Image 1 (tube, rainbow, N blue to C red):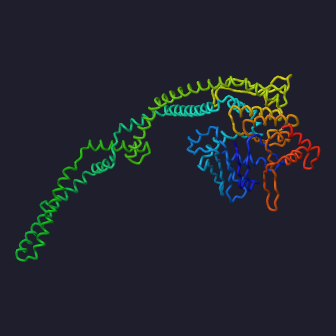
Image 2: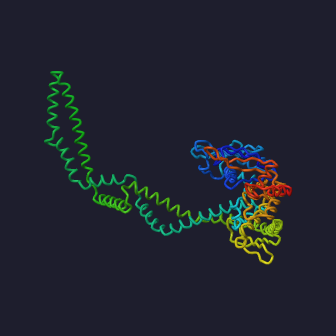
Image 3: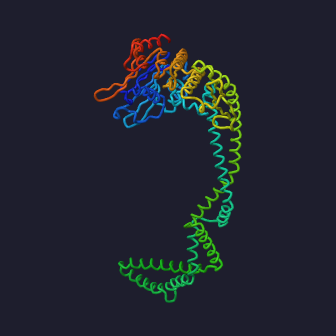
Length: 550
């Protein structure tokens, strides 16, 4: 049961603390006084999206808090799953910070909006004029059938599994499309891969080939250079002969003057180094001769590498190797399509089989529930001033979808000489309101909803019909808390508690306030609803009669 609503800095409400009681509570007030502000604030506290524009003073925090008695509501499992301490009463709080950031709490524990919304739906059902228009939607009609049949949890599980199945179907289709695209590419890919693998590529191979071919193409110059060095150093007229004479002379000088020792040693070192250079030049020169056939082989190899680089638009052999490895991976990926598709097809068949079984169970339960539900609605409509009304739920079978394999169409007739026709084609606004009220009363009973709030569900009804609507709400309030925002005195008079919403015009600002009415204040409020601000004795007497008829 909803025990308290606390609102601060929200639209026309500066600060409001509203205590609520069990039974039937009516909320009345002039048009534009701010009655629906309560519904908006309640929606925020139950997880609806926040619009920063609802904040009265943008420089201050907006806070909406609900205190809900939850004994017997069955929210212990929700608290366990969401790691929120279970307490009763439970405090739901929504904050909109300066700047627009929104935060949600349950028992001072931060929660996500979807968590807050899930919890709120278990405790409070809000019905507005918008929902009445939804009654013409077949999906909404089916949802009402599920609610009254107690199928909410099972249908919720089915929808989750259907979403999983659809995603799996989409994944399977994507893999099949990718395989089809790959099939057109695989021959060319395999050709490219075979070509690159056949080339037996080696890292940095190209630079070695280019060096070797440069030697091969300049053999005579290399041989001439090496021979010139060798002959210039140790030939008949080479440098080593004269240097040997110089070293000999300096050796003699060193025996006479120690100062020559250093020079003699240095000449010796020069001769050793030059002899080594001459030998090395001679050895390398002898090896320069390259087999022309080997040169041709290297030239063909280099041409192949350059051709492959040009073809694949790569800069060097290392890039070709990277491309080859990538083609290998793509080939392995394509080869795996068959296994991947086979695995996904198996998963899809298993999941679809489970969906079919669940859909069949749900469909059987729906079919079993529809006729009794339609009969109950018809009976309720009779009590609501339509003794000849007939309400029928036309059941049809559909391909498996997010709602199962069932279609439903509500048929209605207000007169006994008329066959039931689609609700949206024949029902007036007042008739739609009464049909919805009848359905909500049955849903509330089947789901054991602790609190039901009606936001101006009385649209299109008046007189004795309004009296009957109020009586039905009063009966509902015997087993749960019922709150009705209404313009009709006949409904307001049936309430156990009457709250009046008023707009206060201050010197600088306009605010909305809500206050409970005592017995005499209720008479005056009902009289004003009957005849306007200037009430008459007749209106007051009429108001007293309405209260007596509770």
